[in-house]
Length: 374
Image 1 (tube, rainbow, N blue to C red):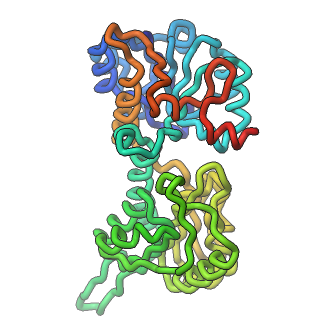
Image 2 (image 1 turned 30 degrees about the vertical axis):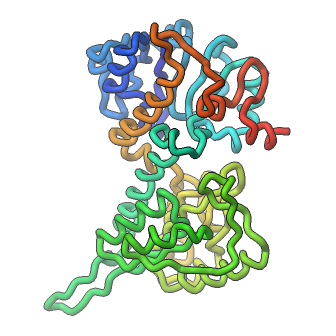
Image 3 (image 1 turned 180 degrees about the horizontal axis):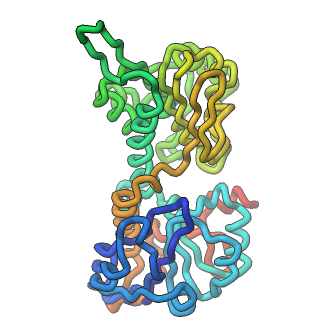
């Protein structure tokens, strides 16, 4: 099998595979081609890739020769038009959101895999790019908030008086939220967290944060650990609690998302108006509508004296370690499809391979994606 690594378009600075991952593939008898400059933004030179056993060649040649193409983001229209029906595509292309792209893959007969559709099982944890990238996002979100906040995070007792610690509210206690809690606590802030899933209460409290509890949440074991749509009665109680806590917070970090749906609106413009001047809102859900009514994706705006940062791709701002984590997830997944002789083995008997495959031979294989498209 020949695997081709494609270069990302800025502002995406990550690479789906680093030289250390290439070496692992070469040891498995896989030939690896990389587009020239594919790793430059992640501080991996073409020379480092060739030393690991890859060939650095122009994009056109990679597209012509590769059996399987890998990158982080979805292909644009031009790239999609250059793909051949017999090729396999692997990236994180959010099929529940990018339904038109799924249809185009289907029409072209391309076998496509989306890393964000990895089943939420114990065996698949080593391939879970969503958790890996959420770790980066939660970490960077707090550092970004601290750099924009006009006050300290920790408490200081000085000769000039006492500086009170910042109050941080984290909405959503998934991987990104828990990481944000941990970093905010390390920086000395007082942290509160809200999540509709009662199961995360102990994790939140173990990190030193206070859990904001609202009774009556609906949970679904089949959701794979994700939040699910709530009743109108619960949403009303939830909103009242969030409004009260957000108004007294210096920083609000929004991480709540529901796969395949618009992000839940948790911070209205009225709540923003009630916050202290100089407060900061970080919205990690801005690409799917945002948890804050006033957030704009990939933009920083100031409304009612509050700085609102819509940032859905913090991992691109920490490309070296983010690429290392993403690439390791990709390698662990590819191992399920590499035969002993290095050839490609699309083993759909494997639940992880089948669950991650979105399109194959003109059909949509992933049941969840199929139900959304139909």
